[in-house]
Image (cartoon, rainbow, N blue to C red; front, side):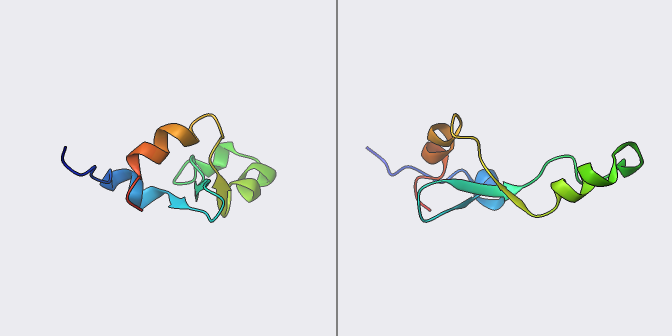
Amino acid sequence: MPKMKTHRASAKRFKKTANGGFKSASAYTSHRFHGKTKKQRRHLRGTHMMDKTTVKTYAKLLANI
């Protein structure tokens, strides 16, 4: 059985945390800010944790990290 390869696109977007979760930047932050409120823009800054329902799927893609 060959080794599992890391999904490189996912590896560039997500970082694994010490407790096994994944963190990433927010979506919807590249353009069209005139349609968003100041509160929305403020909450989109920084990183966010991945939803627990999708962690199992991404853990397989990022098995070698």
